[in-house]
Amino acid sequence: MLTEPLFRPISAGTDGFISVEFNGRPLTVPGQGSVAAALLAAGVSRFRSTPVSGAPRAPYCMMGVCFECLLEIDGVANAQACLVTVQPGMKIRSQEGARHAA
Amino acid sequence: MARMADAADHKLTMPPALARKLLVVAGEMSGDMYLAPLVARLGRLMPGAVFEGVGGPRAREAGVKTLYDIGQMSSVGFTHALQRLSFYRGALRDLSARLAGGEYDGVVLVDFPDFNLRVAKAADDAGVPVFYYVCPQFWAWRRWRLAAVRDEVGGDYPYEILDRAALLRRLPHIGPTVIGASYSPMDGHVNPLKLLRALHTACTQRGVTLKTGHGVQRITHADGVFTAHSGGQQFRAPKLVLAAGLGNAGLAAQVGLHAPVRPNRGQLIVTERTERILDHPTGHIRQTDEGGIQIGESMEDAGFDDSTTNSTLAELARRAVASFPVIGQLNVVRVWGALRVMTPDGYPIYQESKSCPGAYVVTCHSGVTLAAAHAFRIAPWINGAAAPDELDAFRGERFPATAPATQALDHHHAH
Image (cartoon, rainbow over the protein chains, first blue to last red):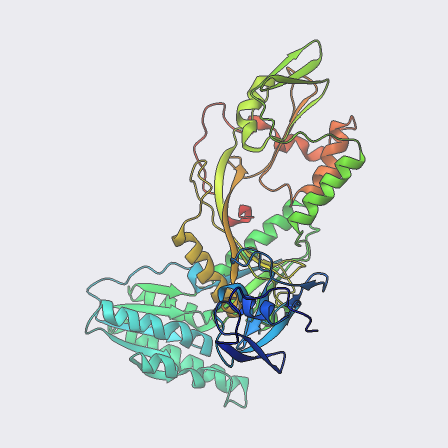
């Protein structure tokens, strides 16, 4: 699932990396910015599958408009990953189809 | 479609300011839940007032002195229906005597109509004002309304009145204050976006050219040909169908028709897509096939202003969460306002012009709801088939030529 990152930080170095959990596995990501940016930098390219067709999706607008970057973050379903600041130890899961609601 | 009812449907008139001692009667757990917050609020509005009567643990916590407990009123603990009946009679005799003796300044009844309507009679006989909260009028009114609809359409209109238990089987997510609903298999939900796409596809396949962004300012009629004037362009045809929404008000008169439509604003909320929680659409809350939940029922006279207001959206959200608490967990992805195309009585206008034959007006506030009727009855008529029998009922002349007085529309039009 993880591939070569599409994005590289402008400033090189390993300062400020943190560990989060993604789909049950530890993942090292840049410790600043949004969850969406952190996962993209770590090589995650599949964030969710759509409720309608099940097609894979990844962040698109990165500014809270397109709802393509939805993830389950610390138990909250359908969180917009581009609007949530990444924190050490976050438990993050891909959003598979429609969220649960009961 | 299920049409929900909750306590907010019923307006409560304040008891007189001088009332000091109120008899309150809630006969079931659900009534206890309504009664407790009501008593708490009344207690603040009427310092020193005393509340006593029939209630449960919540009512006691709110300050009600319970002469009888709801546990005694319910069937639990009685081995015979006769025992229960005997207990009811005793309680009713006791409360009636207290009412007749002038102990109370007012009576607040919560639901439980079999018992409470008798208390109401006793209070009335004693000249004590009665305030009925969660009254049986909802059921009486809804039954009457549906029976009237059934009779109007010649009897072929199945429906059911569901009490809370029956409703729970169809909609397990209803909130604790929902007391019931009506249900008719004749109602359903159409995804409006998919319907719009289907209509566009059908038009394209039949060779229709859609000209968007072309407002029509003027229509002329000469030698059996209509000319629509749009900016510098003109479009000509021997037949003309006015389906211009609110624009019909001005255009109809130019071809001898009368379509006094006015804007009526509705505000809507759409949530994120979620797994299926509503198997039936309700009058104002429905889940689309793709999972989003659409909430909307407001009817506002706001002219051509199609913006949203926080107060209305908050009320829509409050009612939605009261109906289905699970909706409170969901994110809202969009809110918007839109203008219904409304006639004074809320019903459509379908008519061919007498003075300009070949000109038709077609206007209604929901082309989604009536899409099937338009496709199968109105379109063939415009295409030359005999007029459907019911068409005369929809003539524009049923409205006066001068500006009509605005009639109060009920929520059967709130789609």
